[in-house]
Amino acid sequence: MSKPKIKNLAKHEMPREKMIEKGVENLKDYELMAILLRTGVAGKNVLEVSKDILKKFPTKKLLTLDLKSLSKIKGIGTGKACLLLSAFELTKRALAVEDNNLPVISSAREAVAQLQELRTAKKEHLVVLYLNARNQLIHKEIISVGTLNANLVHPREVFKSAIDYLAASIIIAHNHPSGGAEPSDNDLTTTNRLKEAGKIMGIELIDHIIITQTNFFSLKERNMM
Image 1 (cartoon, rainbow, N blue to C red):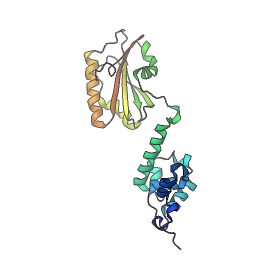
Image 2: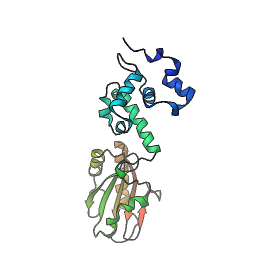
Image 3: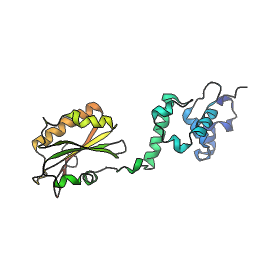
Image 4: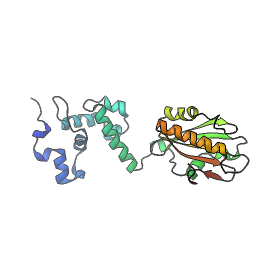
């Protein structure tokens, strides 16, 4: 005997109606899931599908699944997986949940804290900080060593790792062993070139920071980007 479709359930059994009447805090986990999924599968209404999913994947485990894994679960598929991942991600951001205690970089000073080795480097080093959508540092890489020149720093070298690590944005930084923090013409040209390349690729260049032994200069903070 087939189970009743959700539209044929009593009003108090329908998740959305129950939410409106009693408040979201009074819904069970599978009812919240049902609201996100909206529809069931052949032979099972959305409430049954939600119960099956949460029985196999408790909420904490469900939050760790990626798009591919979620899409393979019967009753979800790619479209619903995207919706669930969006809801999960908004929740994580609202609660300031950090993956693997990755450092969050939301200012030039916080970026410089990850680049202290540049203060004493004898040659110019161009380093890129790769960030995810939560501004967490997911990778750091030295791109070049030597005098910074726009003709020598190619966008593909900077953005290859951004693609490999699925970075949402980047911060570039280099040191001035001579001690002066002011950007040179080459520094500005390099910044503009990488910024335009980032626009094409959908990966934002957030800042270019110049570091000396005792100081630093943020092009973003000086409105030079």
